[in-house]
Length: 137
Image 1 (cartoon, rainbow, N blue to C red):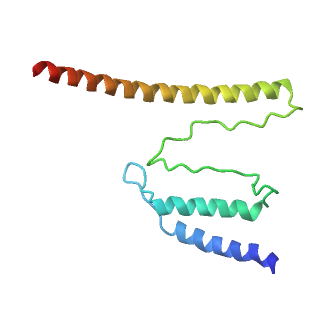
Image 2: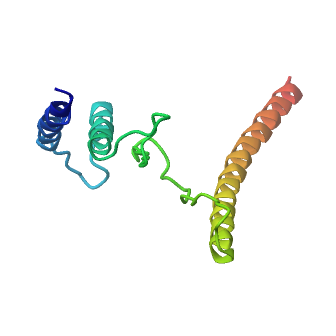
Image 3: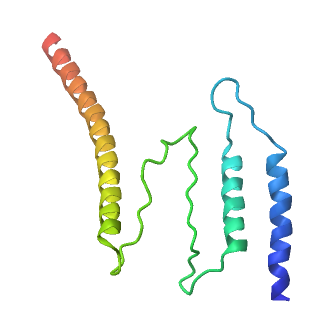
C-alpha cells in the first residue's frame, strides 16, 4: 500500500502542474503579474518534485534545497551557494570556499551600507526639518 503513495502523489502533482501552467501570466512591458497563489503553488510543485525524487534523511531533510524569490516583491538572490568544508578538501577547494564566503560577505555588506545610507539620510532630513520648524516658531 505504501508503494502506491508516490504514484498517487505524482498524479496529483501532474494535475496541479497542468492547472498552474494553464493560467499563463503575460507581460505588458514589465514583469507579468504573479499572485501569491501562483507563487505558493510553484513552491508546492517544486517541493513535490523534490519529494518524489529524493527520500528524506534520518533528520527529515532532503538533499536538495531551494528558495524561490518573487521578484515583483523582493530583491533577487544575491548570494552564491557555498560547498561544505570537509577535512579532505584540497587547498584549491578551500580557497574556492573562502572566496565564495567572501563574495557573499561583500555583497551583503554593500546592501547594508546602501540601506544604512538611505536611513541616515532620512534621519538627517527629519532632524533638519525639526530644527527649521523650531527656528521659525
